[in-house]
Length: 364
Ligand code: BGC
Image 1: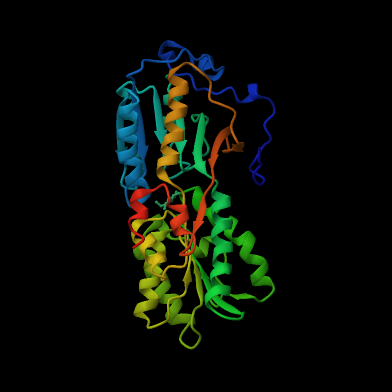
Image 2: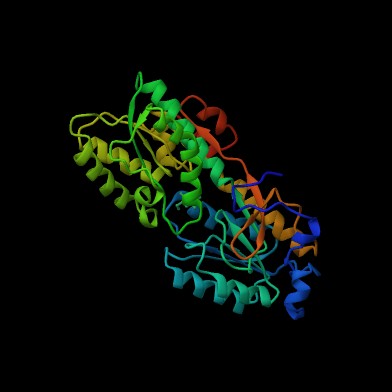
């Protein structure tokens, strides 16, 4: 088991984690639920899935894969996406409670804004599973399934360094840093992971951030909005790169990576080394053609499959399995089920996508 930064607490006993994954206890009390008094629930139960938006490929994939896989498993899926609006997501979760969902899977827009609605769900004996993003500051969450977010950032940081060495000659390298949407708990973790690799290279002069914008708050991209990232890149280029060319950019995902490359192209600069995340189709093609340096694959099918396995365990009346780590979300220690992200470059793309026919077909 791994432990994560200060926010992490060691698991004491498996019992300490006895999850409120209670399933069937609609008539059971919250205390029964917390004690893991699981009786299972109907094989065709309603399962709610609340996604934050469909603005990046991974969430659109999650929408169709959850619908298909929950249906195949015999459940009655209610899958919705909330267009990045917190109130809309709260209302969708309310409606899932009303519909009698036994489990609600949530990818939160804002990790901290679902406390009361999820505590209501928990009090009704509904199990809540965080999907891809941590749910913070509430007791109403039983477990989270995600790709390691600090690990993802470390991979992005290391990949930026590797790309600079491969494509941009000798240091020093001029770079700029971008983060994701600050409400998403993944975004500061991606940045923290990346900076654990990059900060020592800034300190020793290998990397120069001409803007000096090295804090997450300066680098963040509100709402993960590609247009906002492109506008920031435009002003970084006109403000700091009129004489020196930019060599590389840390990008937290593929949409932002493409926005950054559009901006440098419009400024008449050579393509910098740019990282990414999600292995979106357009970026897989770009990596394959030698433009975007790298992306990080976190296959949606694996994340959805792991989540459905947990739902099936709950349906059978089992407790959730031993987690890979436990994280303090501000109110409780949450069980985290971790998958491993993988860096994709032109060099290893065929190997990484060997089992992914759709992406493999993009490598022409
Ligand atoms: C996900 C990324 C995605 C981003 C924006 C993050 O929480 O982990 O896969 O690109 O949200 O949608």
